[in-house]
Image 1 (cartoon, helix red, strand yellow):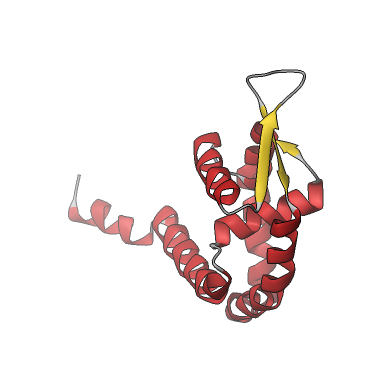
Image 2 (image 1 turned 90 degrees about the vertical axis):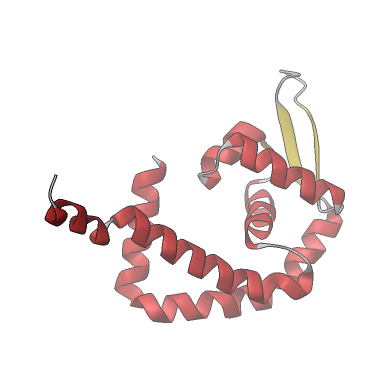
Length: 142
C-alpha cells in the first residue's frame, strides 16, 4: 500500500455523506429545539402521521433505521406522551407504534420551523442536488 492509495481516502463517499448528514441534521435540530424534539423523533412522528400506526419492523425499514435505534427513539417519544406502542395482537413479540394527539399537536406546532430548516440545505444542494440525494436514499434503502 502506498501513500497515494491512502490519499484516495480523502475522497471517501462514506465520509462525505456522513459529514453532510451530520450538518443537515444539526440544522434541523437547531430549528426544532424550541419544541423539545429532535429531528429523528420528528421524522418518526410525521411518518406515523402519514402511514398510520405501524409495526416497529416495518417503520424501521421505511425510515432506513435499525430496530434498536427506532425502539430507543420510540421510548423517548412515549415518555413525552407523543407516541404509544402496544403488542401486536397477531404476534406478541412485535409492537405497533402510533402517534398520540399530543404528538400530532407537537408536529403541527413544529412544522413551520421544520419548513425553515428545509430551506437551507435545499438551497445549498439546489434542485439537482436534492433530486440526487433523494435518488441515493431510495437506492440505498432498498
